[in-house]
Image 1 (cartoon, rainbow, N blue to C red):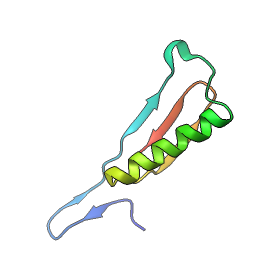
Image 2 (cartoon, helix red, strand yellow; image 1 turned 30 degrees about the vertical axis):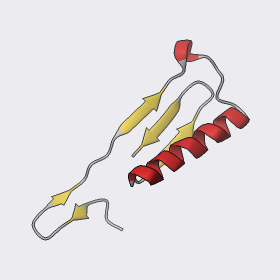
Image 3 (cartoon, one colour; image 1 turned 90 degrees about the vertical axis):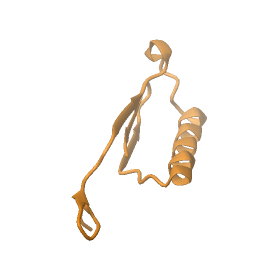
Image 4 (tube, rainbow, N blue to C red; image 1 turned 45 degrees about the horizontal axis):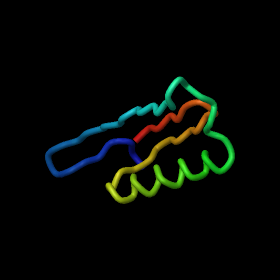
Amino acid sequence: MSRFKKLSQTIWHCQYHIVFVPKYRFKILIGEVAKETERCIRAFAEQQGAEIIELSIQIDHVHLLV
């Protein structure tokens, strides 16, 4: 699959790199909190019709490439 989206007269490639960081970068994204965070992000992306290319949940931040 090509990374470019195409229509009859246009071609585009649009990605957003989003980083979520808890206040004071507390190390709280472990265990059930990390699982629930991933479920919520995936549910919201599906609801909005967005494609998650990469999702990485670290102990103190979340990287999301949409």
